[in-house]
Length: 456
Image 1 (cartoon, rainbow, N blue to C red):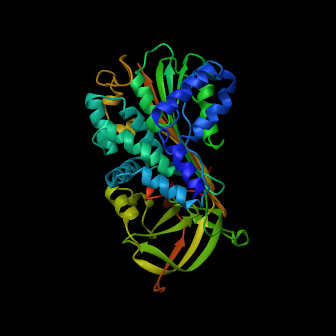
Image 2: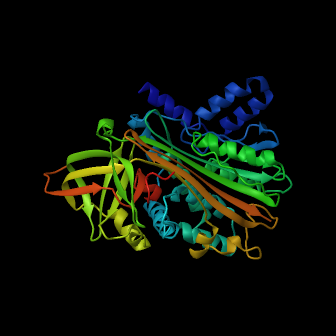
Image 3: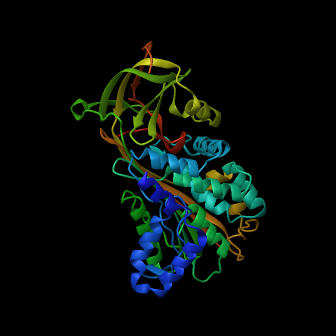
């Protein structure tokens, strides 16, 4: 009880006290490091700590607005988690919007790739939300329509609440979402936009020189740092770039029931284009578990220790995995409740691969056009200078083994100018299959296709 009272006290600091603390920091520079840590701890359930001066984070890069991540808590600290959920309500309509965005975009991004794909709809959603919050006119209308919300205010508030709800960083699991703004030092940007990005999206802002190769080096380092080194991209320099939005997601979790390594055996995997490869399969049989049998697929999932699960969808023999990728079909598949209960035999290939894609053309097919048009784009909430989105790309990586799953993604937007067993399901994943990692209330963080488990 004593700890709870202390927790409540530090999370309910009034704004004047925070402002007073900032002023105190300016006057006591020698104590800056210690006091900043204390203020960051006060941001457990709030919007983040405001900037404290201008700090250098690397050669040629200046931080003009810093933030603090939410405070981590133990995976079995259910009281704190309940308090976070209570203080950060996420509307049912917004959850449906995020899910709908996932089904709609996945239907396009995964279509007929004929390769391993690991797409993060949540990473793209947050990156596009930062873009949409700075748009006006037709540009805003198209982005908000794709994101499934009515206004920038609703989008910012709900993204903020969802961020704190999903954020995890403990010994068992991690779901770390990070955003950042990289702004040309030669352009004036709207202070209100920078503040909203920091307060609602936990996005620090940096002044940079895009003509300096050290800028792309600093951006790549930021991505690597925020994905635990899983992603180490080689970013291209672009002297015409005015601004870059970066989002990263790092996810790691353990199976509730680990696979026995002694039962991992090599076997054949049948490729969609014909032929086979040999890979290592993890094996387990559950005497009683739930599953869903559709007309042309079987779905079941494996629980993860910290509020998540990995869903596997196996097409029936003779059915291509790509026949399951229509938007309405994906919605049916992922939202279907179990209709069977009984023995589930698992044979899952271990896999470890990366994926990257340019998303601009695919977004155009989904109705986003003005944002990319040099004559129509309106991002006047970001800057009064003329600007448009020149590039959007995403890079991801995923691996699963006997212990659990690890996945990471970054999205870059550049601007220029239990019951009685009664049935059985065989989840023998020996041919291309669909999968997803879902957390909390069915939020899809990653969706992908395993075409060839031995390809990286």
